[in-house]
Length: 271
Image: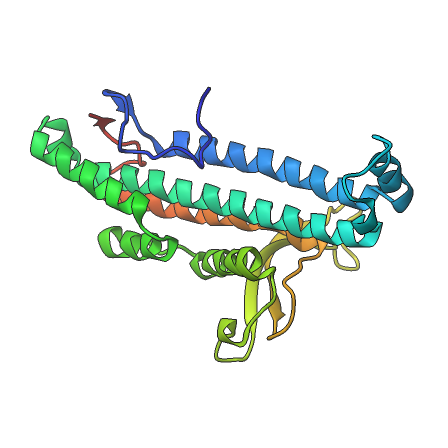
């Protein structure tokens, strides 16, 4: 059974002679992101579709319950399921983001050390492997810092990704309740999303002119005592945010490859 992108640790045990390319990384992670988007859409639709009658029907389908006296009503379970779906989606999507950072770091390291790696130097390959292993173990914020320090890679949505990771820790550790120590200098805990906005044609535009779709920045903030909850559109916008992050990262990696190799960013074969 093959590993998911979240489980793989690139660079530690790459098969000898395997070519690592930006195209392959892009295809892998955008494909995984689409699959997670589809699953999230189904989960959100399911929560919205199950009414109290259906919930009670399946609750009593086995004829008895473990402890019927504490059986939760539909509203409570719906809220709990929404929180569970949000936590799982955030965890999966941030896992994809971290995995993508790991693989692009490996590619960048190979590009930066292309001549030494292709010479077959054991010392060069050892250093590449050790550098990659350290990066994989690093915290998310440290990954961003290392990409900037080592390769000059600035991730456009770094703050948004970090804030989502911070929000996930609050949801897992405190049930999503925001504490005073979670707030920024402005007294808020803010999350940044990418959303798609439809710009309708102006008056007088030629007949048949289609609306224009644009990516836009949106912001959601919470104060101390609030519980972190996202709307349906914000939940579905999580995958749009991660996709935008991927595309920005891939552009930066491609630019680095072109500067170093005079072409795109396919790397030498991993030894």
